Image 1 (cartoon, rainbow, N blue to C red):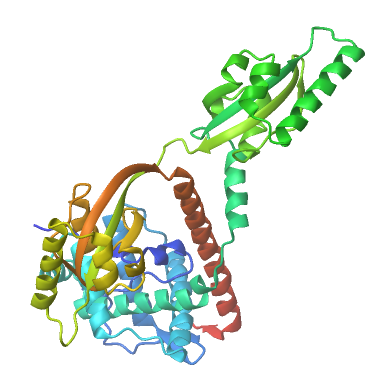
Image 2 (image 1 turned 45 degrees about the horizontal axis):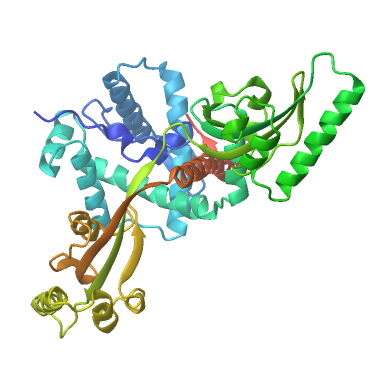
Length: 437
């Protein structure tokens, strides 16, 4: 028998603002008998919330909490929380209506089919399980429609207005480094101009002058390794001052405050310790877990479909091209002459180094099956028919790009949460709300 669906996590964005956004409000057999007159419990601008609607929400939430094994709040507390959420939902729905935000039945059906699929069910199985749980499928559909409307509204008023600069990403990553991400690794170099124990002022002055001169040479472009070999008093001087890769927690105490705030290629200022004057260089930095991707150098020839070019015509044309290449003709020359991809045809169909997820799935799947140098049979995508050649493959460390992308995504999600909270608070303050409960 199919497992019980996870109704409560249909659209994760709703849960980001669980204290503010309304939860699902599916009716059930446990709902109150509505034969009595349905009274109004709140007026919201030009609309209202009925007691039966609030009771349906209370019943639904209780069902969800029981299923999750969570303690149910007192009746008065739960009633107030859900009424506040219903009010905020009503404010947003009125704004969405005023802005012409609609969800047609086709989009709604696709969303519900997706929910069923996520729960490992067909649409029919999903409907049956809802009914077994006492949930009205028609009401369920309309509540999902509301959630989609709310998502689109938030995208219009919050998400679309968020911008993230490279400087913000830099600051975020620098803060992470300052907080000492123990899994990060640093490739560092070290030059030491030593001092004897109980050094006198003249010795200190001479050592500092020598260190200043070395730092000046390095800043002028001198090779760090060569300078270290010739001048450093450190234990790794003969290795060019290279201390190798060190995790944040493995950095010498003297370096721990400096290195996480440095950028690859950067030199520190002179740092004094009882042992002497130190110069540190950060050669490179990487997250504790490298992110390695397989890149493919690929090129293609595209034939688009049209009123005059059928699937069969396109396949025949590309099979002919493949035969000509096998007979010795140049792929790039044929791509320049025949390919209908205007962006790549002038460069012989060259797509450059392609990373996973960069191409559409049908194209990528066919490309990945090719050995270096191999040419595919004609491959159909939504753009037309392709002849693909995988020229070369390589393993690429894109940890830095991956880390920056993750940082950017984290900042974006943080801004969404903060922006949504501020936006909802402003909406609530500007609305007319009268409680009658």
